[in-house]
Image (tube, rainbow, N blue to C red; front, side):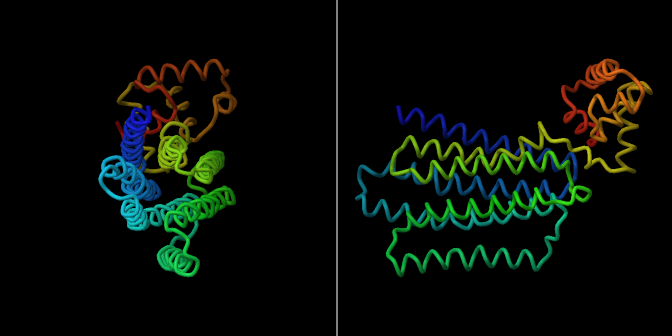
Length: 308
């Protein structure tokens, strides 16, 4: 039973990883926003640690426990955890960088140097000193270190998103709040599961699932839920709207509705601004979707930004 569950979760982990990276790559091409590149780097480092240090341990144990002594196996496991630590530290660094870019905060050289110094000098140095002075096992240090620093970095990222100047934010504040709450919720669940882990394989599998969900949450939210109309600036993208409307034979009134959709207005707000009924807005929107072969606002905005 355990082997079947592990195999299913491994395939699911691959799916979340591939899907998340493909979505981020699509967002980079669609919107040309710098923070989507940071999101992609976050995923690459996060998922690399997941497969190298987490799944790597499970695979090593599964295939070598029958002919390698437990003491040597534990040493190999500890080495893989520490060798994979830089990927995790870079992922947390990218998470903070992403949150600051979304909130239009400075991410210059001094900030980057400070955060990298903290990640690669203070954190590993503290772990080494604790191991040297107290004799705490490396795997215990990694476990509680992960819990502590995932809490600190996720909370710091959420704070940067929630305290943003709404006029300067790169996306809608509602989406900033939803992303923050989503990351915090997954982080708390992940850390609670890890805290109670004591070599129970089922608890380990739940933690792995939550770990990969944490990495895949943001790109999925950006692609299918977030209102990214603020990324459609004036000028060049207005030309994209005109070209888009000509290509799909959009009527004058439907074009007005598209402009308001790209501005992030709700159906009721569009009705109030254009002095038409709510049902008329819905009818126009339906016809726009049929003409352009779109199924959602997010897809429509993405198609316009791409000029396709």
